[in-house]
Image (cartoon, rainbow, N blue to C red; front, side, top):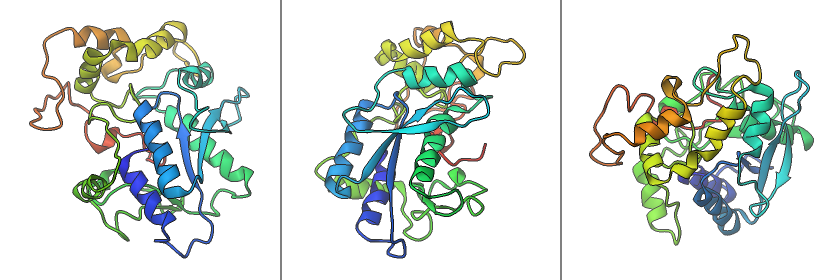
Length: 277
């Protein structure tokens, strides 16, 4: 959970949208969330949501025609490891820029499955997403059709500076750098971010390295070409090798731009559940 989504959850819990007589707060865990993100989500739940946050994880149904289901976990029992990714990859193959199915399988499907389990059929409810006014490029073109709403874009317009100002006044805030992000090795990150992460802690990449070794041809891999996770068809080993060569590390301030290292940077690299595919 990020600070913008946490702020949105707080104001809704405080009654900012009284026209909704039933509200459910959900967080979908991929198993590769930054531990600080999980801790922050637990803090938000206990401090602002009254323990109403529903922690979900994907359950992959290996019948080819069935979407992923869900299981309910807790902050304490939420998976920290590669099992959820591995199960998804066994069915669908390695996700990457050309096959971006991890968000659907590990986040959207379990949320939809949970909603259906409590009687909320698709199209019968609105889904509020924590996107700010300054993140217009993350808004889905299918928002109206899919009943997706963005309260912090129009109804309660907020920008990054506003969110920072709010959390600066709180007792606790999410302490994750701009290159760490919630999903520690997400393939959507720029290469500069990956090289910086790999310099800081190469063990972050143990799980994607193993999955590339064991499942290069898994899933709907019709052309028989081994898949890798990262931008430009780079493998995990390519990321580790790149981190060992001279490059300018990622910094939130005083950034330089390089067509190769920074491709895909900005809001578009976020793991947006209801983004256009």
